[in-house]
Image (cartoon, rainbow, N blue to C red):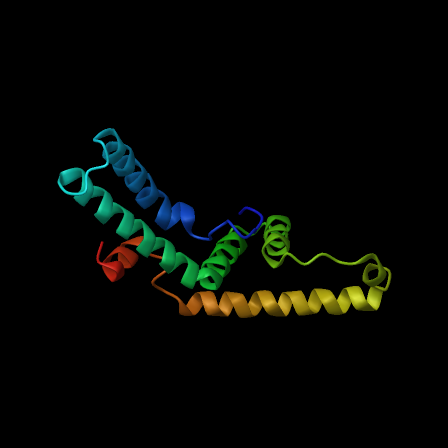
Length: 142
């Protein structure tokens, strides 16, 4: 799992990457044909771009569920260090030096973080259609 920033989209590799490649190839063919306003090249770019945008919108709308699913998948690997590293990447919260000095505050922050992760895992279990990309394709009609 990669660090989260405003440009990263959870679920890109699973859902959007192939649609992006198809749209990119169609764009290059369209440009090579002289950017026609009608014809096969235009229809191809129109449809592939629409499918790409629809899939990207789906991933952005279900961003929290995608993150929770990736955390649950990381948890299933049974490697605590990797799991908590991924939790830290997703949460984007850094401890300030003043808080880290007090052990009681550190304990309460850890409990709060564990509670947040459990809530996300519960949300993930409720979202069954994200676990099967075939069901996503049927849902999007693509």
